[in-house]
Image 1 (cartoon, helix red, strand yellow):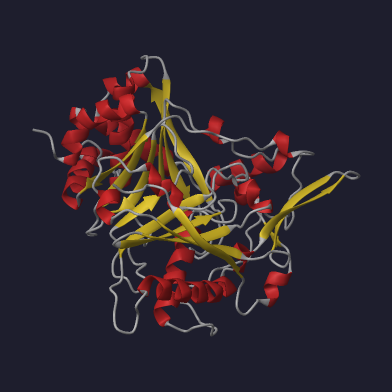
Image 2 (image 1 turned 60 degrees about the vertical axis):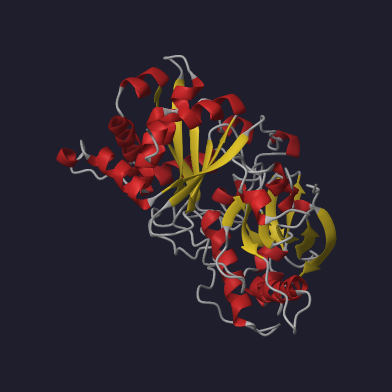
Length: 456
């Protein structure tokens, strides 16, 4: 018998070393950042094999932890906003409600060490991701606004019987997925240089100069007087979470099928658009929605290259938005798979600088904050993260990770999270969340199994 309880071992707070001069100034948030204040943190991490005991290292996990703390301190010198806390400055006359990051009056980023009496097989062998994985991350159920009182970043190292999990919980008002993995990649890079507390150059320094619409910034006045006006807590329904693997060959087949009818229109459906169309159709079918029910498929989009002039991919912060294709459930299933893929292609193609400018103009006129309970509905599908992020390149001297796993944050009925496949080569792993009765039907759906190339 084993215990599924994760045991807390220790914690500390870590500050940038050296402390950057720029970090002494308020770090302001832009429209894309502020819109995320009521959303959960990002929680992602990697499961590794445990380092072997050697003559020089009787406790290799403790050696790993101490080196990781040093590497985090050095990395934070580059990513200094992550060592701060959120601050709200309010004034009544004239009205002012401004949220920013204070890096000075903060204990720093949190570092947690924990352990659990489980093996790698206990985590990866079950059909569904075990709930204990949620305890591998700090900030359980926290929303970004909680960053006023808790760390904006926590690195948690959990020791298993034969493995080590390194997970990060990072405030989603400070980073999007691109910036999240930029930080994670840099932490691994610094670790592998074995530089102790020395100042280190990194291959991709983050760009901290904030993007603000012309004539606006650096501070944005939110139209609120109290947090009750824009903060809400979202509890997910009972969900089953399962990771499905799509080989490069299966994805190529799905993409070719989606493009078979589009060549005459000189349109090219991407693998992601084709895969999203498959998820949209299959989830809609197993949900048994009424024919007149509106259903949508949302894709998370990186706006860095779409803004004019474009931003660097090293821009540190949020620069994302979702695009959505909608139709009725009846129309989605009456048409073929290729039609659904084309609808998603059109939605992506229309998401350009003009569309972004329209969104920003609307937000500036009436600033708003996303609400998880309203933003995601149980009749739609949301495709998040990206298989293009370098996840398995983070090794920390442990070799390639065994798996990528995530916490409770931002999970709901119809959420699909995209990861690169473990073997690489263009393969993908899909982390899919559905209520139990829908998951059972989804696993048997013929169109889905055909996409996986497992039918028959």
